Length: 67
Image 1 (cartoon, rainbow, N blue to C red):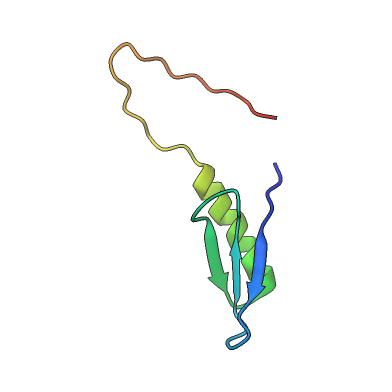
Image 2: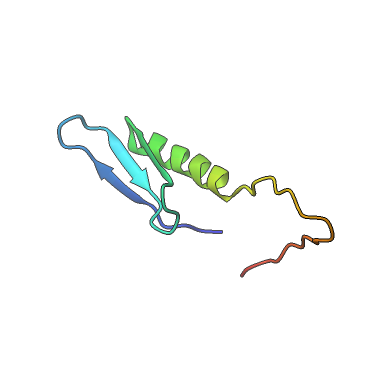
C-alpha cells in the first residue's frame, strides 16, 4: 500500500519534519531526508497496527480487505 508523505526542512536547523496527511498525528522529525523517510515508514506501520480489543460476550470479530 502506498501513502503520501510530506517532507519539510527547517531552514534554521536543517532538520527534516515528515508527516502523512491521511493519518492524523503520524509524524516524525530527524536530521536527514533519508532518515525521515525511514522513520515515517515505521510510524505508518505502527499507526496501522490494530489495537487489542476486548470483545463483549457473543461479539464476533472479522477482518476485511480494502483495495
